[in-house]
Length: 251
Ligand SMILES: Cc1cc2nc3c(=O)[nH]c(=O)nc-3n(C[C@H](O)[C@H](O)[C@H](O)COP(=O)(O)O)c2cc1C
Image (tube, rainbow, N blue to C red):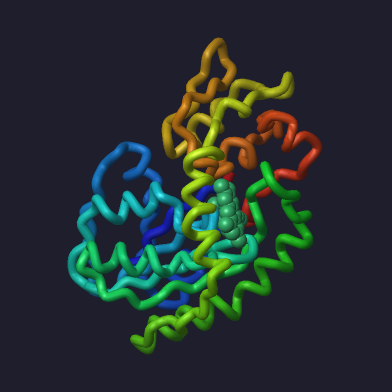
């Protein structure tokens, strides 16, 4: 079974591509995480966990979803991390998680997709995004071939810099960076509530028809990137920046 988490659709796209190639079942973790419900899932086929990369690691909320869920049947676990460029040494923590869960760790494969972190960087134009997504297809083919043949993903070489990014820098990201208070809306907000629906942390409420952010935020970028009126901003950092939504992600 292919179980995924996504903020703006990239990881769903890759999870779907694997499901099609492998004839396997697809499961969105959104509902479980949003409702704080532990998953109880069964699969004869290997578990394939697909998620974005947040600060050179799999997002903690998805790690916790796996940690607290019950995944019976197959004991094999593959991980696919979509990213804007690099996943650092994310594999080490995934391997530890597998030990904790009694999974046999079959490796992690990075898939470069358009970068959705518009707080820190420009999102690519739609044309460029489509090009990046096309270039991800051979990696998805390779991942599917490994899983189909029962082989582990190829070992990734990592160095001190990768360990620094996935270790102390990641810890600093969670400690200092995950603030929701810079989120606000401009006069373009129509009060449609899509940001509220898209928030996996239930961190957005509507007050007098306008969204207000609480203090739980994982910066999945769904609220800001999926707003149909492009009315959500993060401080001044995102002003004038393109928004990003994976082209096949339903509105
Ligand atoms: C909070 C945050 C942190 C990110 N950190 C990284 C990173 O460390 N390395 C990287 O290559 N991409 C990073 N990205 C980019 C995303 O991992 C990438 O765009 C991913 O495909 C988004 O997937 P989604 O559309 O399924 O949410 C980050 C994005 C966000 C929102």
